[in-house]
Image (cartoon, rainbow, N blue to C red; front, side, top):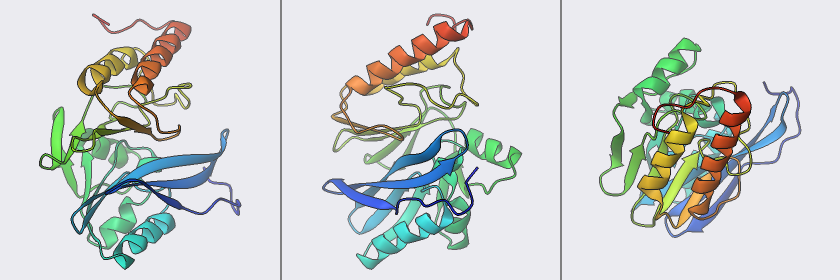
Length: 232
């Protein structure tokens, strides 16, 4: 929940490297205080793709206007899971006829919550948002049942979203602790060559963030007393 009248920092847009920007939005979340959330903007020529929306419609509009003012057309936005820190701008984007993407599971969870859904869906383990440039990968359940990551093969940047939690698992309200360690191993196997890893709530780092996430997932599972998935 957002605290009414909360004095929040402004949306931040920072260049990570050529053709890739990090957008950071802020929200006051009950029990957690002011939370920052990172997403990406990926440029392909004069086309721009949003990887997660900011928390709110207002910040999403500001981000889109910032890009349009610089000559970019918004060709799509993908949400990495159903929580509002990834999907808060979907309704506004839909109202502007900007294509929004989410997995079939993410859309089902949004529908169950009575929230705006993406206009385009995908299934399976892999989906190319832009062929050979922006790959979406489902490592398995972890932070949520539906969490996906986004891989930029040209720059070897991995957006780990809320799945990558190197310093603590955080909000476990929709987590699958039994599956997270195995899913984290899958992610390490797939993208261990990542040069940069961007997570939703931690500082950008290298591929060591994937192993740290696995360690946190194992710790969380052990502390929960839940059984791990077979072959974990």
